[in-house]
Image (cartoon, rainbow, N blue to C red; front, side, top):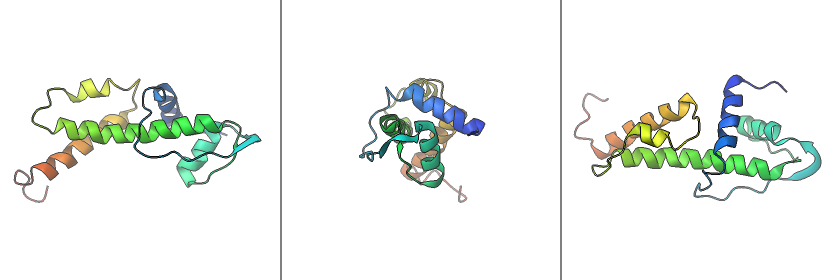
Length: 130
């Protein structure tokens, strides 16, 4: 199967970070195993794009990648929240260095979350509906 460049980048990103990002705050589903099932990349792509769970010959790898993806999203929110706290002395770039070769969307997601948390914590600063 031919995958999009974006999916290939994300897949590699999750594989490179799955050892570090293991906490996501929720249970990861048990993936059905089938010795003749599709590989983890194919099954993850189907699940990520359609929500369909296909039996896989590599169910544990799918679970690790799913956990990593959920953990990265959780960390993006936590890091962004921390960046809006007055006691935080770190920078966005320092937090981005926590990830191994993050795709561009990781920085964009963090910036978006920082804005969201900032507006929530400082509504008196936001004016003109922005």
